[in-house]
Every structure is written in C-alpha cells, then in structure tokens.
Image 1: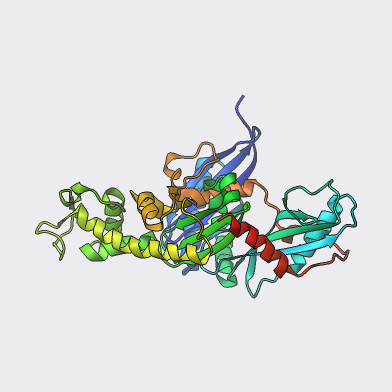
Image 2 (image 1 turned 180 degrees about the horizontal axis):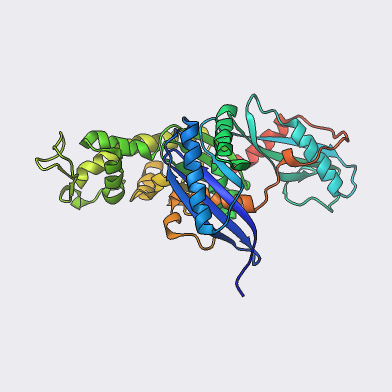
Length: 419
C-alpha cells in the first residue's frame, strides 16, 4: 500500500540568482517526500536584499505556481529563507532554583518564559529563539531534564538576530504574492539541517554557503549554530570576471564557467581550446574568438583566491582555529564548480567536502546538488516543528533570572573547546 500524505510543507528560497520553491509532504510512514518544485530567475534581489518588490513578487508567484502544478495541490503557507547581511548569532542563559524537587513540565515552561524575557535583541529583529541544552546543578548538555531531581535548573538559549528592514522587505514581497509567511528562517540553519550530520553539529564543523552574491560562514558546535559571518561576495562575481575578461554576456560567461571552468589546474589546460562564440575577438582571445582552458581557469582562480582568503579570515575571527583536520562543508551554487573542494582544502589547510541535501525522498536529480541544499533544508527544518520561545504561552510566575554573561561565557568556552 502506498504511503499517504499527512501534512504539507512549502519552502521558498529567495536568492540573488534564483528563486526556488519546494512542496514536500510528511508521509504516514515518516518520510518527507518532495511533491513538486519550481524555479525562476531572481531579477529583483541584489546581494541577498530585495531591490525591487514588484518583480520579486512576480518571480515568487511563478516559482510557487510551478511547484503547485507539479504537486497537484494549492498552498497558502510558506517557510522562507533569509541569507542577507546582518545575521548574528548569540547565546543567552537563565537559571532557576528548584530546591531539589523533581523537574516537572511546569518548571521547564516557567524557565523558558524567563528565557524569552531575558533576550536583548540589541536593536535587531529576532529570527530564532530556541532552547538548546539544559543545565542541572552545573551539569551541562542535558537534553531532557523532565523527571530528574535538581537544586538548580538552567537553559541555554540560541538566538539568531537580523537587521529588521531586509526581513520586512522579504515578508512584504512574499505576502504581496498572496502567500502567508509561516516563518522566516536564517539560511545557515536551514542548510545545516540538510547537509550536516547530527554528529558533525555536535563535534564542530564550519558550513560555508557559496551563494551567487552572498557567502555565509557559519560555525556549528554542541548541536547548534554558535558563530556567523556574512560576506558580500559569491559565485556571480566569478561569472562577472569571466564576462569582463573575454567580452561576454553574463549568460555566456555562466555557461562557460559551468561547462569548462575549474578551481584546479591540469597539464592539458593549455591545449584545451574553448570557442567563445562571439562576433568579434577581444583582447585575450585568438583571431577566431577562442581561449585556452588555462586562460579561463586563471580568471576563476584570481577571484577564488580573494574569496577563499576572506572565508579563511572569517573562520579565524569566529574562532575556528583549532588543529588541522576539523571539517569545512561547502554548499550553495558556488560549490558546484569543478575542483572547488580540493582547492579550498589546500587553501584553508582543512578537510573540505561538498555538502548535498539528504533526508528527503523523491528529490529530483536537478535539485539534488549543493545549489539546492538551502531549499531542501528549509523543508526539513519546517517538518521538524522546531520550538521557538516566542510562540510559547506566557507565564505569570516569577522566575529568578541570572546574569547571562557568566553563564554564556561558560557555554561558549565549552563549545569553542571542541574546535
């Protein structure tokens, strides 16, 4: 007997180069199956920010309608990713006295309520406020404290903040396409759900999303995101360099990059000739408008040297400076460039792999690469029904709150120790 769809989740990834939609169904056998996907060129987004609301609304509607036709269903609610600058990650902690009695659900609810009230958004918008791990009498890393006895119960809360205006513009653009925004999710959170194993997130790993115009560098440890930095560079900058170097249109440059480009060199590069199919030869090409693969790779490498250098600096600033061997996972459209993992591994001096989405059934081959990891992860994240403190009912009881700085320092020290 075939599995039956119990609940539908729709993911919407609004990027600088493409807008993609995915309708996934939670099946009665526990699987999350892809029912339909849609994709449109993103013409109203620059460096992750909405630059033209009307154009973005049309592109969103087109991508969702394509997914609806394939899935054979109409949807109203969407989970939307956010990858622009201004994303920051912080940890805050609260504790309460229990007097040695057994931890009940009521105690946990009161503690989480106190945690919600302790969040200082520092003038930004809260995207996520999720309980991470609990503390019992100084014992860190407790996942399920209910039923245990303790004198003190504490919780570490993971908070993701973002600049308010860009988030509101995304929300406005999606609602303008006649869709209800269920939640706006930080892109590294979604992508990590699809590309990182539970063990990787526990032990410590760096996730690098190479988008078209934005690169996010995120650190995971202790099961949560603990550091985040956004760089205003991406794979589209490589395409632009190729276009300007050889007198090509962007579409031509993108095609040549995908078919012939590489981050690594080989002895044959000087002998492999690429026909650029241009009307008039430009400087750097031969009389018939051709270049060698070595010339193409030289242009690509010049931009990559800068981008990977910025990524390495971001990792250093975030505290990812432990012994060689700690892993870096590359995702995003830029991670589809041939040889990128070997190049990054050599440049960063760390183990590097390309992250592809896992955990979904019936995922189309065209959407199974790193360029669609964020979209797939968004659907997976939505299906996990994540707890957010902002949606919990408020408690009227007073809970003693402790200064967050000391407890936060303890937690951060423990997590950074994993690196």
